[in-house]
Image (cartoon, rainbow, N blue to C red; front, side):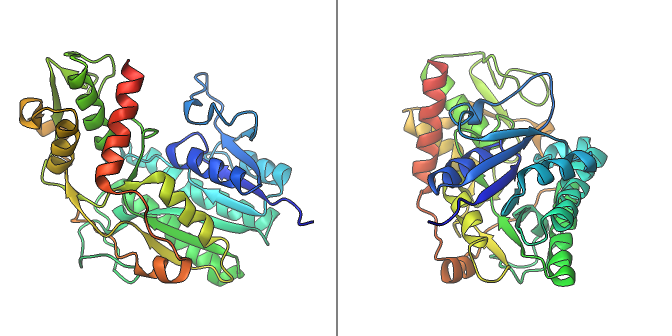
Amino acid sequence: MATKKTALVTGITGQDGSYLAELLLKKNYNVAGIVRKTSNMAYANISHLQEEVSLIQADLLDPISIREAIQKVKPDEVYNLASQSHPAESFRQPIHTAEITAIGAHRVLDATLDVVPKAKFYQASSSEMYGWVREIPQSEETPFNPANPYAASKLYAHAMTRIYRKSYNMFASNGILFNHESPRRHLGFVTQKVTYAAACAKLGIKNSEHLNEEGEPIVKEGKVALGNLQAKRDWGFAGDYVEAMWLMLQQDEPDDFVIGTGKTHTIQELCEESYGYVGLNWEDHVTVDKRFIRPTETGPLVADPSKAKKILGWSPKTTFKELVRLMVNAQVARLK
């Protein structure tokens, strides 16, 4: 009988980490996750899994704690998903973003090579690295051109993963993931903000209890304030995307893969779909606020996932409409 594989996931309490942990458990892995020691243990995304996974306290800012965690788990596969993941927030905290998203990833990579050199390593790269895009759609061959501190930090981690792969013969793969959403997304992200606001509108909630990044109610006097409504994104479902991460580490050779749907939608279309689903006109509930417009807008970011389809046999299962409805329904259920 084959022995159980062990996986170590950084960022296990986040959206992707929780969906990945579910997938790995279904595939009969032992799953361990790195969590930060904080006074507020925000484990909502994995509360249903806590009996089945091992949680280890460590911090991406502390190389000793990372090394000790890897030493304890001795994983066959390491998935580095932890980061400061808000591009907009990265302008407010550029140094912190670099420490976590760039150097933190490097610390995990280095400790993996040192402690379990035969382990397979996955780095969560981002479509934000394409930034001011040089071609549309974007493939693995498209030049990177980061437009915010988050993207620059992700590019450092991406490049280091490639360097370790070539220099130390390490099985290290990058997944260049385009925007992927779910009901487990943080409310700071625009898809959650819009679907939450649509749910509030459906239930007649004029002022929401949850606050936006400016410390004001997300829904104020029945309206949600957003930035650039014409910004385009390639949005998919996080539950589909974690399968691609796993598939990358099941290949014979490490490589880098673009993961996305290949279709873009504007934030206005997101509003139309969300409010339309609850029988309302989005224009009655959405205002544009200059404070939420990024200093630099990227895109249009749209994936060319043909390599992933050909080599991994991966393609997204969930449509944009299905994703929006899933998120609105989850917000309505929560608010009720």
